[in-house]
Length: 76
Image 1 (cartoon, rainbow, N blue to C red):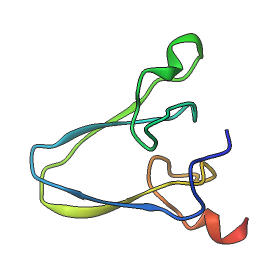
Image 2: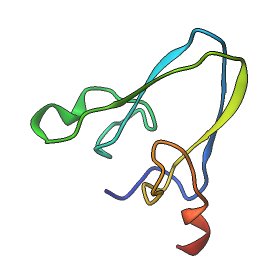
Image 3: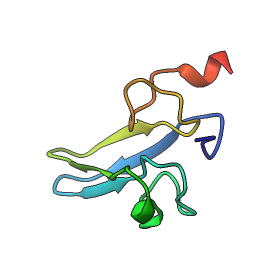
Image 4: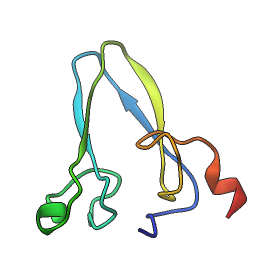
């Protein structure tokens, strides 16, 4: 997996939002799942949010805490 960009995605979420994040790296709509994983062993990471906040989602696909950014992009 190569990722979509070398910086995290800053995503504003609202209480009650439920998002499916791509884990296969094949989505054309990264970091969101678009179903491209269908013929892989990967499944999306579905996250529900219980408060309004900004989350930082991995864009480089190197984070050990995916779907969240852990700063791995700074070492690329």
